[in-house]
Image 1 (cartoon, rainbow, N blue to C red):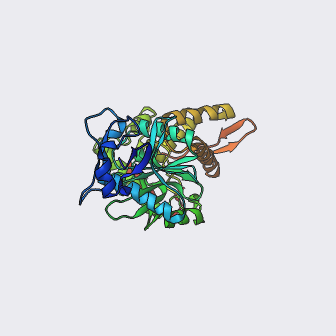
Image 2 (cartoon, rainbow, N blue to C red):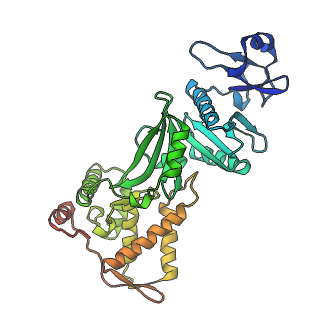
Image 3 (cartoon, helix red, strand yellow):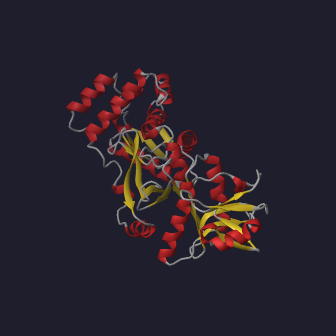
Amino acid sequence: MLVAQLNGRLIEAQKVSKDTSKKSQANFICPQCRQSVILKRGQYRIAHFSHRDLSDCPYSESESAAHQAGKLRFQADISEIGHLAVIERDFDAIKQRADVYVPDWQLVFEYQCSPISFTEIKRRTAGYQQVAADVIWIVGDRHATGRYRREQIAKFARFNDRLGFYFVSYSSKTRLFGLHYFIQEVAGKVVAEVQKFSNLRALMAFMRTSQTHYSQQIGGHFQARQRILHQLRTIQESNLRRAKTYLSSVNACYAAGRQFVGCPMICHGQAGGGLPIVKQGVLGWKVWLVLQLFERGQQDFSTSELEAIFEAGCEQFLIEFAQVRVGRQLMADRFRQFIRDCRSAGYLRYTISGIAIISRPQWFDDYDQKRRFILTNRQLL
């Protein structure tokens, strides 16, 4: 840890002079458990305090040099902006200690270098939101690998209308901050735009002044035909390997006498993806919707029946986020858009009480038939 008490006052390890260290080594106290701690410093380690004996104190957990260096870097960058940044700020009311706290902004920064469960990050986030305006989790090299997994997005991602889903990283190796934004699913794969920044000031300026709206970026990575063909190949290869990726969707289609790989083109959509808010991917959710709307032999759906389908879809597919509160709202927007897409394609019409089915989207018999359709038809949807 980087902060201890000396004579009743908090002191940072890096600010302890050598003379003070020699005179006061026996007087440094852990602010949490009140046990004696010692100051350690060396050629290759950042100055820090350590408990003299094995302890149950939560502050006695070993802390990597990368984590310690990151906290000091955040403090320095925030100070450069002109604001006080307090390292290892204790919040007694919630029994949590923030890596860095900025009183002027009522903002907590947490630097996450080690593994952490979804339950724990959700608990800590809720705690900090009781005592501060907000908390920003900045992930270390372990969590910023360039591969975007849904469980990672569920833990660390935030959301706003300009950047869409995003999170911030800091590399102790390159000493650069990273903004991973416009996180979206394209052809079944979660991708993102990445910008690197030399300091927090530059990062925050970009986030504050970016004018692009996330909806303008959805699906912009590939041309539609190549994108859907890629997704089709992925599904076929997954089926041949008997992988679990699409297993629930495959089983649902099989129960309805259909093949998942032969799902209607409306399931792929114009963008071939969307926001990373569903557990089994956007395609799996849309196929499930087609089964609910068009494969049950029902001709009319009331508004309450559509709401029931939406609720069931949320229960089965919606990802729970630790940092994002608008997931359900975003899901509702996508559900309404899918209904509009089906109307535009001529599959249904609006009625006073809900919707009425006009025709049913085409399913394909197998992979080859669908692939030929995609290659030979100018109008895919």
